[in-house]
Amino acid sequence: MAGPEGVIHDIGYQRYQGHRLGRRYAMWSLYVHSLRTAFGLGRGFKAKVLPWTLTAASGIAGLVIMIVSTQTGLQLVGYVDLVGNLTYVAIILLAVVAPELVSRDIGNSVMPLYLARPLSSADYALSKLAALISSVALALGPAMVIMFAGNAFSTKTGMTGVLDHAGQFGQGMAAVAIHSVVLAALALPLASLSGRRIFASTLVLALFLITAPIAEGLAELSRTPELPGMISPTNLVQGVDNWLLGGANHAVGVWGPMHGVVTLFVTCAAVGLLLLRYRKVSV
Amino acid sequence: MVRRSVHDVTLIESESLEKRYGGGTLALADLTVSIEPGVVGLVGANGAGKSTLIKLALGLIAPTAGRIRVLGLDPLTDVEQVRSQVGYMPEHDCLPPDMTAAEFVTHMGRMSGLPAATARERASETLRHVGLYEERYRAIGGYSTGMKQRVKLAQALVHDPELLLLDEPTNGLDPEGRQAMLGLVQRIGTEFGISVVVCSHLLGEIERICTSLVAIEGGRLLRSDSLSAMTQQSGVLAVEVDERADELVARLTAAGLDVRVQGRELLVRFDDDLTYDVIRDAVVDLDVSLHRLEQRRHQVADLFRDPAPGSEVSHGRS
Image (tube, rainbow over all chains, first blue to last red; front, side, top):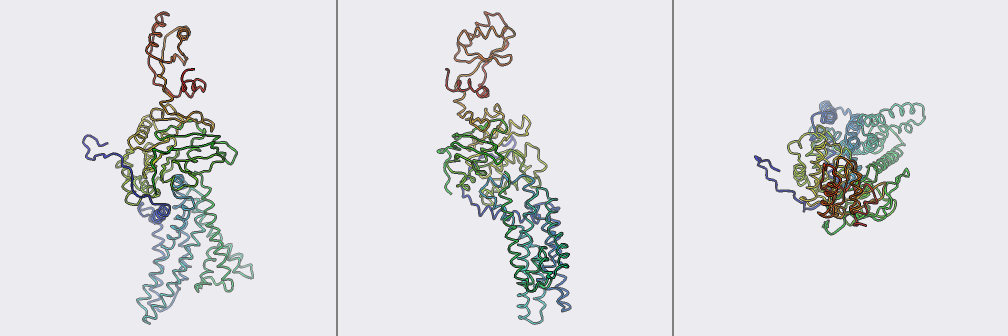
């Protein structure tokens, strides 16, 4: 194919004799690819702005709280509660990233190309979900690390202080994990309903932002405000924080286990719906 | 994974295959066909069931009756094995506009199980083979239709499949682009040694590059044969005279020739050189002026157009 003055010599088509890796590898590759997409890596500047701004915002929040508490000795917000306070960062990130991960493939009809490959539709959906969970965790996690690093270095009680903060850091990371899994699992099936990013984003935002005032309104009418409060996913995860990790944002008292069960159920149902939705993807 | 040699298995084999969609639409009915390696044209009008057959072959949908085997495997149970050896190019747009071709084809290579470094290497090789050079580092959104079709072909080819399924690869291309795409498909079949099933509703276009043809209509098999078997008759002479064509037909028929009228032309079955003499003598006797006397490259379309003469042609003269 080289032109008369060309220097590239065409050695013809080469057959591939090497090893072919299976579905697991394809899932891993799709996960890595999606995670890179989530943060705009390998994309233009525009794709990076929002995810990195949000990650930086949560990092700065962690930094400010860490500096204030180390300088003044006042514990403004605990690790777990900071995660709870950053829920809005997580929600905006989900509204940006979830459509990026799934709506584009539906809108550009890339799905047939995936499904004609060893990957099954469930493999595809689970890889995307894993990537979305990871991207939320990556946006919230640094705040925990900053809090821990600053506090551990400035502790005045030596090793005991470091261990104390390590324990709180562990709780904070557990909260990050819970929030990431639950919120991502709820957002992804919604985003996958539309091939247009704007609609997908709206659906995700609607779920989190509309349920909050409804939950608040119902809670005011109810004798047991914890129960109707569960309508809002934000309350739900913060209730779990309160029950398991000593978070103080949303006290649920004896209803802690209930929040745990409902969270688990809602998460599993959302994943189930996601898989169901992808079984129906037309090719 | 053990790779089978494609040369000793049938590419696609179906037995009484039937696919009825949810709405009750019968897309394929009782299709029994055996497609041998080579460049195979799958022809039929829009809605004849070509795409359904491809989806069944990929295991993307399940047949409602009958069975299908691809490369000797069942696409529904040996999903992974079948799909890692098959490349699929869909009919419609399927490319993300904001990725570069190099990045996208690499990604698709990895999805088919190529290790990362190999995927990158093969992606740029494949893009070069389909005729995309420096453009491959630009976002696909800015590509022409022809370039997009090439990227679609490259992503089907990147993992070096044994079988390529191309659904209307010339869709939306201008005449020049169509020729280039067909040339590419032919090269893949011959030089690359990859078997190709190419769907088209334009028989005349793909018959040039195919080694065999499968024609379906309304979900049923019309005909399946190697191209040489279809065109084994020595061919057709096109005769055009300016007047008294019907008299010429009568004369030629009387002389024992098989004549069909098509527009202004008479198509005369060509048996041996004597046919020329018969036509010449007839024209001279009638004293008409002969505008054209040429040997037609056999158009397979002629065989499909009319089922009765079609079958006659393929099985010799009756």
